[in-house]
Image (cartoon, rainbow, N blue to C red; front, side, top):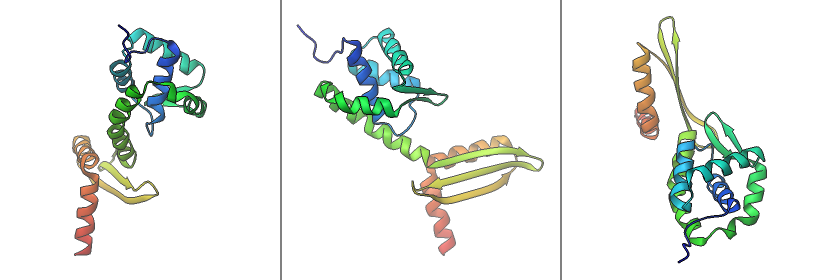
Length: 171
């Protein structure tokens, strides 16, 4: 009996990789990419790794310190042939990728970093709306540990902090 949910050909596996990367707004961590491919294409790890390597070699995918991203060349190639992927796989992936892509877009709009200074730690926080910065906040805190905690809380709740700051300023 033929399994319609399993990709066997290298070209199909490469297309699956490009399909996934094309729908993400930025670099995708290797673990996330492998999980999406291995769960949705019935692909083995070694086939996945080989196809990903070939896509990098042919400059359809780039590998950065943050992960993997589709190139313009890969985007054009995928656009032409992505409809040849089985509909069930495309639909399942689209549903899985949508919340991940939204989270990646949100994370890209939030910045939080700190640097050690003579008097303590300088924390810099920022929030963008995709068009430009809507909040930039710099403060001095007592330690690197405190700075990391501030960064963590800000990343998790940036919109809430923005709203609370606006409320305080408008009272």
